[in-house]
Image 1: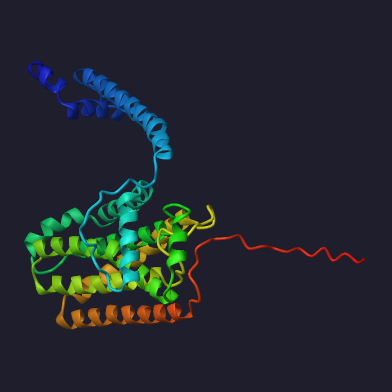
Image 2: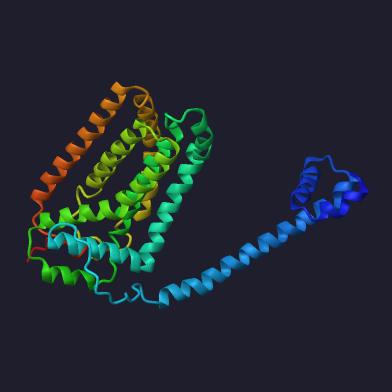
Amino acid sequence: MAPANRRLLDLLPAYWFLGLFQQLNGTMRAAFASLAEQAWIALAIALLSAVTILLLSWVVKLRRTVEEPDIVPGRRENRRPLSFGAPASTALVQFSLRSLLRSRQHRLFYAFYLSIGLAIALLYTGVFTTRANAHADSGTISAPFLVASLMVLCFAVLGLRIIIAIPVVLRANWIFQLTQMDAPSTYIRAARRALLVVAVVPIWLVMAILVLSYWPSWRSVVHLIALGFVGATLTDLAILRLRKHPFACSYIPGKGKLHFLFWGGILVGLPLINGAGTLEYRLLATRLGCIELLILVLSCAILLRWLNSRSRQDARSIIFQEEEPIDLLALKLNS
């Protein structure tokens, strides 16, 4: 309130909004009048700037996104590509990796799904509080972090499963149709490896670095092993009915219900993930519980793997074109 502090308070935005709070709270004093006025001016400038940037991004960036090609040209390199098993598996995994890295559309979609997963994980679990808990008990991983790691992994697999249904270009599937020389099970197995390499392995490595940095103990190793089994289970669940090449099957817009699948998975999956993280926290408290945890996740992984193998054996062909079913209507006219 001292007059000598007026010049300093006019330079600190925090006190502007203190004056705005006093005005909205009904406890306004004369000393806060100028501060509240500056807060209203700052809010108006922020709102005007946000609307302007949104309109510019909509007009300029959207037009540029539509007009520019989906795939940027790659650099010619003589390096030998990484091998992922058989030649068909290597080709399909390399195609998936390069499609995701070079396609602006797919990078944008995948970044959108991952950012939502990270935001929900941070806000829903309060993962920032785990850093303070790490100093209190360095041998026990906090329950919020367990839930957050499971949540980010689920969002990574779910988001990638959604965007692989969107083709890179409509003529991309013809390459695979002409070169399809193996059984359909080979390509479905390669699609599973693509999901593991692109979605599960990067998230697992990041979580391994975080967990071993804050909680270097044998419980952390058990959690990472269980997280790997969960990633394998989610991958088998995602491709259980998949009969397509990632990024190479044409689709009918509106029939995929991509956003419905994503938001429905969030509403159904959040309580399940929270319950799974809480259960894992209880099991990690004892050695017997850790053994039970590993047996549980290993059993789920083996079961989904067996179901996926059965489904893969029943596959007769790979789908390259999504087509509307032809409905024949009989008029039943008597001659």
